[in-house]
Amino acid sequence: MKTHNFLVFLAAIIKAVDEHQDLLRLSVATAGNDHRLGANEAPPAIISIFLGDELTAVLKAIEEDKPYDGKEKELMKIGATVLPKFPKDSTDRNRTSPFAFTGNKFEFRMPGSNSSIAGCNIVLNTVIADEIEKFANILEVADDFDTTLHALIKDTIKNHKRIIFNGNGYDDSWVKEAESRGLLNLKTTPDALPYFKTDENIALFERQKVLSKEEVESRYEILMDEYEKQINIEALTMLDIAKKDILPAASKFSKELTDTIANKKAIGIDLTYELETAKKVSEYLTEAYQAMMTLENDVKKLHEIDDFEKSAFYVRDFIIQDMASLRKPCDELEVITSNSDWPFPTYGKLLFGIQ
Image (cartoon, rainbow, N blue to C red; front, top):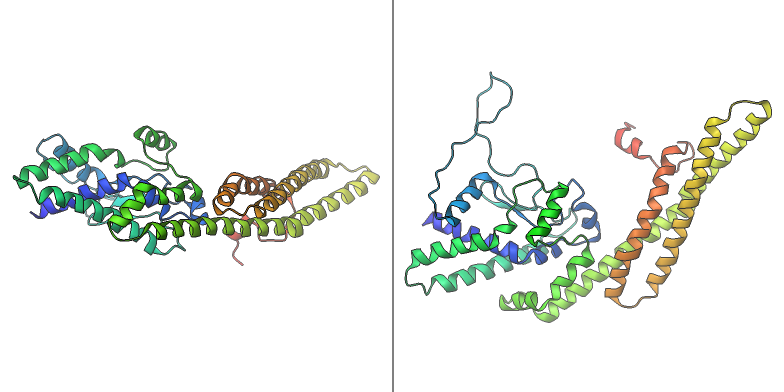
């Protein structure tokens, strides 16, 4: 019976995660987490479940009505003959899965470090409770409990196995495969949050007596507004840094180069470094200034929008792109501007400096 209990709950979790990918994604949606998800140090924004080879094989045997003959544990190869051999763990250790079974529990790895776990726990508990309730409604009226239970688990695996993925979530091929499976890829917060107020999801929260329609809609408005305000602050900060620090520093370095060029030219010394570097600095300065003005103008347009939904989507479609365009030439200027002129610690100093 314990095995049946495990399989019932496992099937319910698989079904819940597959049917409610949108809610799980939006439960961790923030401006900061948009940068993190899929950035090769966190799970991708695509929801999937890692079960490991052993548990996946068990489910496959159930789906195909075949007996499962548990394969022997593979021994870990560590390259040292003097050390004792030990079984290789069949659960997830590569950390690319957003929802992974790790031996005796599932790990939901998508929340950002500054997020409360309350939001995602509300979603997780609600969607799984809803599926357990549906299972119970079927099993409690079954004439043949064991046959009905087996069919229920088998059908659930067959209908929702698309959500199971044991491969590398960072690989570009997974994005294409996930699309072919019909899985959602909600890259940004404004992409994800509107799913909160769909009729289906509101009915789910009301059915489980967790949130009313008004409570869902108020949370949606707050989260969308929070996203817009956070990016607005970041954009204004970026403009301030570019205007007062980065462009003046690069301009100062450019002046030093042109002064050196004039002095060296007077005595006929080779000017290759100074000329080439001054040209690059000038090009990046122009590109940075133009990108800065575009961002500034778009921020002004943002402040004229008085609708929270339109503001959030405007941020996604324009402000985020403008900020990326401004960052690109500023990053290039950091590489070539002298350390004495650059106003901030460089990436190199942050990563490798010891003082």
